[in-house]
Image (cartoon, rainbow, N blue to C red):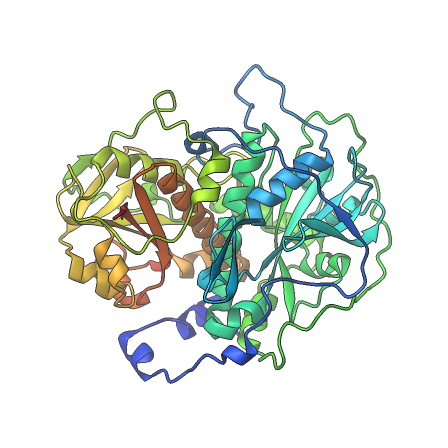
Length: 520
């Protein structure tokens, strides 16, 4: 059995491992991008209500309740239209393109390889227009598959050890990863990608819920097998990753008092491909980080609260390097581009202009993306990234000398660590040209050894997830600017650490986002 640190070591990229890899994609065996049940009933979704809140405000929300510090009363009870809106903005099909006799459907959130292995389930009580039940969101038909009828919210409340957000929410969204959909291309690294890609989905989901003035937070501590049983999924093939309770503060509806009995089910689905390949390391890593029951989830959550700050910028020694003030725009003068429009125009930019973005644009993107994630590990109120540090390699940016920096969100500044050029950026990012052409490369690094020591193997999940949500917010904050674009990329793990050392000697990269001014 593998622990998270061993898994991370075994799935690192290096110039040698990439050069010697003779793996070839089998396009005839490519998995379907959608989960399709054979005979479950469906409930159609109505037209959505576009999330009109300003992108740069919605993605920067670091509190579960977006109106906690305002005199307004947050919205509580949910209806079918609101749930449709949240699902659409998180994982819906937002763009369709015909290309070379194929119809390409692009989802709301980015996904490694556009393989879309993350699915959403709803577990809800009676909502206006939607009876209590367990539902699977089908993006291909924009409808809900009825997995179970009845109110099963108590099962989730018990699985979390009575976490308040879940216990009081009228609905909770559960994310899952279907391993083979991503492993077809990325093999054992899929366990990493599960949290990168669910993180980008959750960045959208949180943004949409908060833009609509609903309470929402991420719950990472829960007993895994009871949730999988409730959803009717086999974790060796599809496993639960996170819970997101939506609404609930001040709700007029009674929370569930007891967890009903849950009989195992295994609904028939259309096969993903002719010959799925099993990668045992993925499920092994997931299983080693699973929690057995609600008591264990509650105890793990307490350990998280005690460990907050284990890898924040405040915990990294200040080397006294030269500071570059970023001066991000404030909320009053920030771009008012609605979240709905930003999500629909978000893409994966691979062509960048010679002239880079301004220092203020870079500062605004970094500021909004790293405010922190409201979750059960911080009681729904974050103050910056808790488990990752942000580093920046910048070239061609107006007002920022070319170089390598650590981002210090508490100062809205970059601390210079050393030099950087386009060739360095390209090489570290798996020798991909786009990283060199992009003006800014943002790496999120965590001290995986320390986190696993403190929080067990699930701590590794949490570090990857926080980085994935920050990645999703980097996408959204970038595309909130009309002239900017960006893309997530992979990297040579140890090469990144070496370049950022001695500052990052004890850290390892979780993810990378490259952005800059688009070449239109």
